[in-house]
Image 1: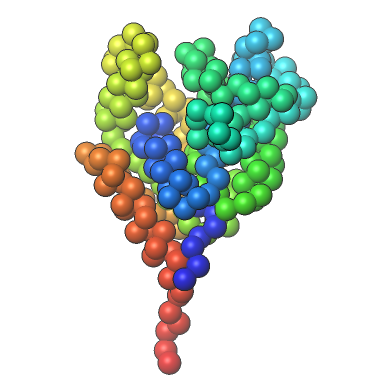
Image 2: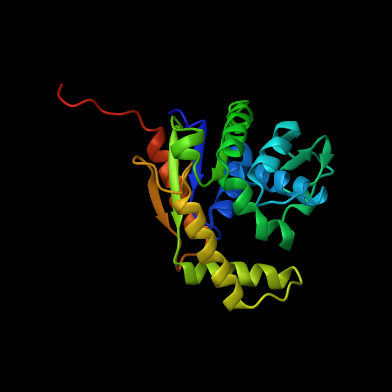
Length: 235
């Protein structure tokens, strides 16, 4: 039995794909790689420089100059991965409200995505990996050994994100979170380049009403199923 060495997990925000990917990577002792952090790092760099996020040329030019890398955490790291922006660990800054509000714009630019996809492939193929994002199975790693597409109702996803923000001390209302999520879904699904959609051979996991443990068990079963050799028809 050979386990899939490249696992792609896609889906909309707060569907549970990040939690699942982290648990699965830890279970398999694989690199956990959330590709969204690369767009967040680029957005953070633009905000630090007070650049206009709506100016595509400016953002594309900036991204070409940035050194963004993702590594496994060491004993001194708190998170599941370390994100380096020009050598600086910016992992803790990538979930700020300002980055949240602008990352979809950065991620929608064709040349930005092209740059990031190339870098993501290099990082993702260094070692066995669980890579999570919105176009991993369709664009970044279309030949991934196993593709999972994680979904949930938008209302449940908004509730999860709202709870997460409250725990972090944010005061965003549920209604504002829901509105932002609907807007983000629309941008991600309708963008011209690398739109969010399930790959044809992806296995869909609907997490609505399920606990993290239940979702994990479903994913592990998919991993085991993908590890079984195909049986040829006939004898």
